[in-house]
Image 1 (tube, rainbow, N blue to C red):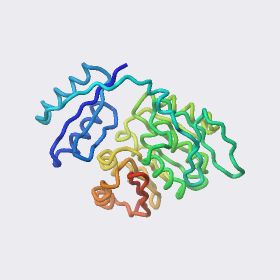
Image 2: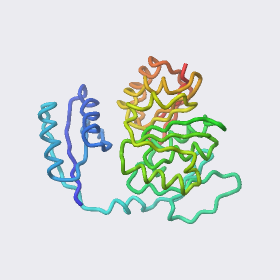
Image 3: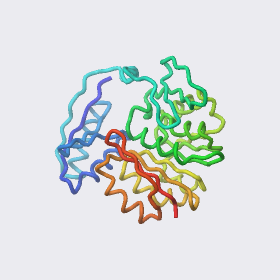
Amino acid sequence: MSWFAIEVAPDEARRDAVAAWLVAQTGQAIEERADGTVVSFALSVSDADRLTDALQAEFGLAATRRELPEEDWTTKWREGLGPRSVGRVTLVPTWVPYQGKDGETVITMDPETAFGSGEHGSTRAALTLLDRWVKEGDTVIDLGTGSGILAIAAALLGAEKVIGVELDAEAIPVASANADRNHVGEMIEFLEADAGTVTALLGPADIVVSNILRLVNVSLLPAIHRATRRGGTAIFSGMEKSEATDFRAPLLAAGFEILAEVTDDGWWAVAAERT
């Protein structure tokens, strides 16, 4: 199967709007290059042409498409992955033999095509903050759960109830299989749903984690505020370090007080108390 990269160079004022529109249109993450180019991806020539035509119609922007070399990404991403420790948690791919130490929290993962192997800085940053704040008996909501890695970590670190919300239907069985593999399947409920629609209905939670994109996180702030109990903690990730300044102001305006910030490989995450 061939993939196609769709590259477009909006001016700075419209870059965030174009990026958010592409995510909404494709359901795929986008790449933002240092020169301002925004890159999205499509699975076919027809999808790529549809996106380029729509970018012209919606924003008046000319986009180019580029066919990517065929790779079996279902196995390619496994190359070079090994155990990785984040706080009290050690993330171990299913195909790597590993003997855990006494008291070590080991999560065995196979993300397959879902996001979340522990190799991405945004996941590790969110996990670092989750490790600091989750307590025995907590209720945790994980938005954009992907492979289920953060939901599983919450359950293993003491949460009593965990809900993982994911828009991608293909990720739900992957997350469920990973939860069962780590013996916490009965503690976690995975929902195929739009976080913007269901989040406010799922609380009150002691912790809400949202590892998505900055613009999506901003749009979810009111719902996350309602879903988080007073004094509870919201953790936001999926943002580059350069986006921190743009996120702090709406975060504070939404009724949160910043507790801690973490940067991992250029990705920024923040924990905030719901006031």
